[in-house]
Length: 76
Image (cartoon, rainbow, N blue to C red; front, top):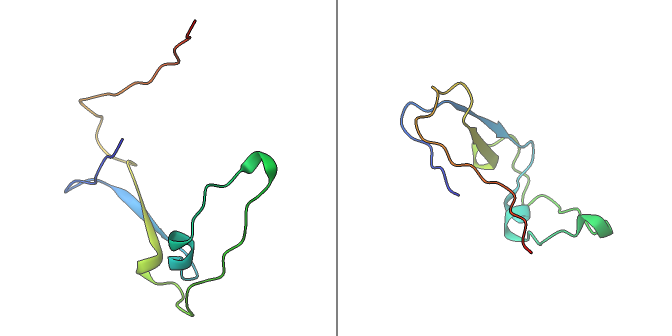
């Protein structure tokens, strides 16, 4: 499900203290149960740049007028 931000939506941006381009370019499916999470070095010397920000939306917005609900389904 993709919910693109709209004009007048509220949210916040969290900015990493280092370049995250290498992380985004080299992401792999991590197998958390096997502990195979690997560290990635920063892509450059860039620090505290908005280019390394991630928008987190949906906070302090008005109540929605449309809803989408996912329920567990038991298959027999």
